[in-house]
Length: 407
Image 1 (cartoon, rainbow, N blue to C red):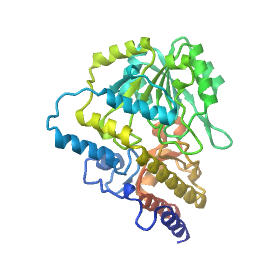
Image 2: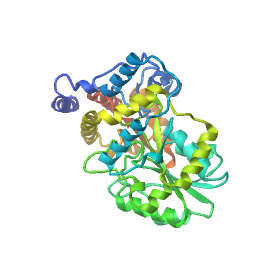
Image 3: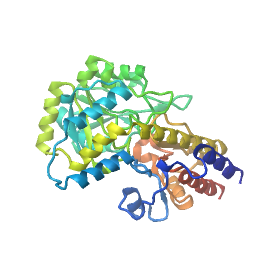
Image 4: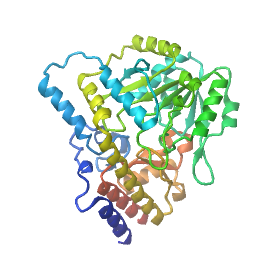
């Protein structure tokens, strides 16, 4: 009872009696939403509360919805269209204002997803049998894109320091490099651990790659979901040398909850790298996207600033809820993420193996989370929880976990 009153107090204090209209509950189980439709296949039951795949149970901004409605209302032809320069300029302006990254129009091209971009970049900038550095734990497609394209993984384990902060070991990483090491896949900010890499860390990593002629593919799709006092730094923006050595992957999908529009961009300042990438892109022929995706993309970057500010405030408040809960439940440890809307829960104190841990969350707590082991060997004993939900949904999930722990 005491724990419920604490969570209730936080909810009322932060959200008021009725909650924030922008982040109200919307029923998705009747739609074809992936995180709901796949519950039976992934968890063996339809009854789990799904908090796994990284999209938000929060409405896409009204400015995006309105722009799409206006396009449908005033122009009934949905044929082939290319991305307009004004759409790219909207993203360029956003990156300048929010991240201090000056991007030229000719550096940008459309791609349907970051994962597709990673695969294209791997094929464009390396040969079969070459080595690619990936830090463990990390978003699972980092592994599969390397293996599926017949390249070899160099796994560098991220380790927690005495404060629980994940770090890479630059000297150990240097010792793993061979003449066949051609690429480094960087997740910045990092999914699932929520790190925002510091300037010193990025400079050290960049210098190592430049020294060994290793190209950097930097997935920065989570760059807009960053919490004070942290600030995202695009690695390509740190020096002219890194600008020429980096392919940066960007997009509005995470920021504005519009992954269903299948639209992202690839930023390649180097003409040499851009030519190699474009050759592979045209060979695969991904096209230039869909009409409504272009409209949504431009609207988000043009008119989504105030919504984005409120979103980060909402997610920050949800972090506080998880912090308070974990303080009362020390068997599950939680270090607040510096970025992303993903909580990396350390469950090792429960004394369960990874299979038993997953079964505990599904069968006992009724929660569908992402198992830490799916992010690599270093994820063993962890679970990833997506907290981009209305506050009461989060508190109900924590109540379920509370009851399971008590049982």
